[in-house]
Length: 212
Length: 125
Image (cartoon, rainbow over all chains, first blue to last red; front, side, top):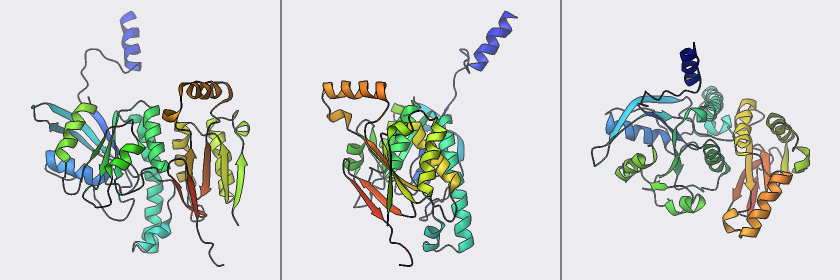
């Protein structure tokens, strides 16, 4: 009876001192078109030899949560880090189907994409509670002071979730890692080009430090 | 013409998070720009985006949102203590929140203490 009570209590508290957590949920968050899916593909191609998500120049290409289980990376010292990689739809405060028309979609496709994109944003926010570590992927060519960026980081901070900021697209001339670092001085910012693989080795080293 | 509606902190301080967000969103859906004294909690800002997404139609395309907040890192100890005491006693009245309908407000730029609000050109005029 007493044993059953304590086992139930531990179960309710999701705590089992005899089990070792096998891997963490690592989320990729950020505004649309920052390069979350490109980074997800880079990680999966580097370590699993396969891609994970489709990418497009049209915003809101990822409209559903995509999960890749059991991604294991190794560092120079032979240490391993295993995680479930969660690629999320970009978070936005507005979605206008007419923006998709301008990108060449027909009316029906544009409306469908807009509807799916709104649902995707809702899912991304709901999934924040399930994350154990998050990489916030920002486009280093864009103004970092957007309220979406501030809100994402604020919500992660409020949930006490460790954050690493990736300043993506550093291959582009307009990019500025310093602008992102000065906007969010309390976070570690690492500049990479997920598309061309620039500085990704440093990014993997950083993953070991923050996703413990 | 662009209409701004001021929302003093006292109008929302006793409301639940859901009611706060609904109150602000209802004003925005009337094509007005909200100027709110203070700021929402961090989680409420996330909820505001989530609820906004659920309300999007062909007519209502979402919101533009910006918050101006004093940079605590640039404050001296006295200012920090006074700010914290004020927040504890009177709620988070520091700063200002701007929320506008995306059909009217094209972009709000913040850099970091100056706000520039760009409106869309009215159609058919």
